[in-house]
Length: 212
Image 1 (spheres, one colour):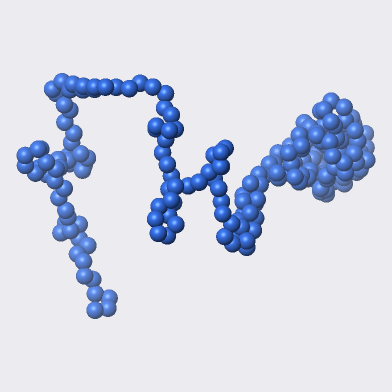
Image 2: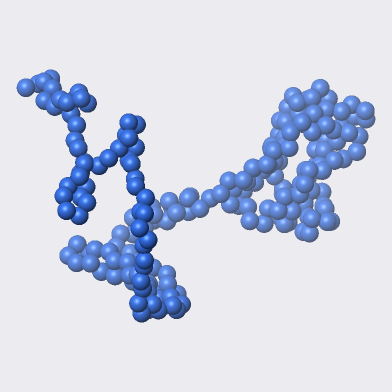
């Protein structure tokens, strides 16, 4: 019976009534004209009695929950070491290698900061220094969007107070871009910029991007 409709899809003819019980007889669930449940409040007082209450701090031995897995035949409680770390048995070296690669990639974090529409002047201006001590890779991307040339300088610092010029200042022509990373490692790094020619300002954008 190809392409034959078997079920009735008309809501007027395809309905089900839901019943509850009042303790003695079954009663249809009551709704209003919009289909919302009608709920009656309890008018009589409700008294709750509790006996032999025990008020105490929870303890793992008495109140803990055990988590089980299944070995294909029966349930087995998950095993941990003395510090609570799960014990894992290596059953397939290739599988573990792939798993480790996946975990390593999933732990990467991406960080980015933008400094847009920066105007250069005759003296150097610096963006806030970035703490790169936890970054595996990082770079500064600079674009000169103005009409004149800019001078860019990368500096590094051990304490965010004393800065050393790690890359000699270089010119960035108008409407050009560059990517910069430090040659040496110190905890902090920053970019400084100014106009290459006196009284000829330009506009630059600086992007900092890093991953842990």
